Amino acid sequence: MANHVLLELWRFQGGRCAYCGRTMVDPRAGAGDRNTPLRATIDHLRPLALGGRDDGYNRVAACLECNVLKGPLHITEFIRLRWNTMLLNEAKARIRLTLDDRARMAAKERSGHAGR
Ligand SMILES: [Zn+2]
Image 1 (cartoon, helix red, strand yellow):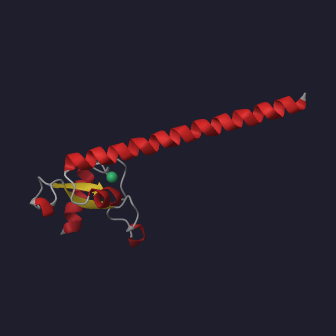
Image 2 (cartoon, protein in one colour; image 1 turned 180 degrees about the vertical axis):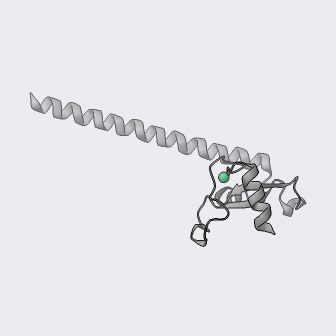
Image 3 (cartoon, rainbow, N blue to C red; image 1 turned 30 degrees about the vertical axis):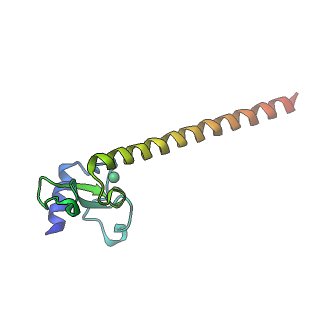
């Protein structure tokens, strides 16, 4: 039953996680993909622990990583946390690329000077 609901949500959301927007693994995938962070799971916008209902108005498909991170957090709180973390990681990756580029340029300059 749960698999059918999950598959429906997954299809409805175009296979993307409701929170981070990444493409999730097809719920019909084999057991080998069960523990990937991008496994599709059912999440409750308002957590059941906080009185949320287990119905279609409260259910979304979310990747396992978001589901675990969200825990009992309120949706607003979680989205803020999630996006701050994602933007921070993206910024770090950009900075790392910039630093790598600079290191490459410096190495090229050094080899250029050595040739003279
Ligand atoms: Zn996600």
